[in-house]
Image 1 (tube, rainbow, N blue to C red):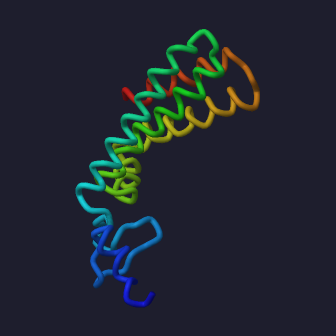
Image 2 (image 1 turned 120 degrees about the horizontal axis):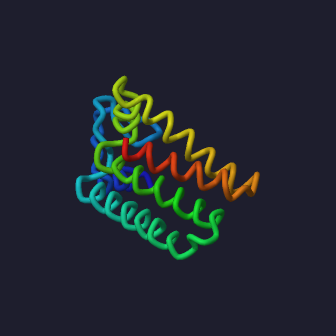
Amino acid sequence: MERFKWLPQSLLGGGQDQEEDPLGEFEDGSCSLSPLQRLYGFAASLVVGLAFMLLSLVVFYKPIKFAIMFTFGNILAVGSTAFLIGPVQQARMMLDPVRIYATAVYVGSVILALLCALWIHSKVLTLIAIISEICALVW
């Protein structure tokens, strides 16, 4: 089994001379996935996220189900860019001083929408949270 230790690194496209952190990124910020794997991950996450958002329109008349599907689809679609640039770089860009307020409003509205839908079960508060989530994304 010792002779196959190099196989996972070879398949993932990572270098052997750099230290890798648990998120799959190296010290210099490059991702351990190959460019093709990153593109596949981006496409799959984006397609699934958009599918969730489109399917949420089917249950639009039930705001709680709509909020859950729309929010999870939204998280997948926004998170899909982390495959292209890496999760640490994505976090750095989201926490940039220019974007920090929009990021705070977006994360807060995502948490609020899920809390209102799953815990409080308030349709009005859920719709308000979803509207603020959409506004934060546009902003």
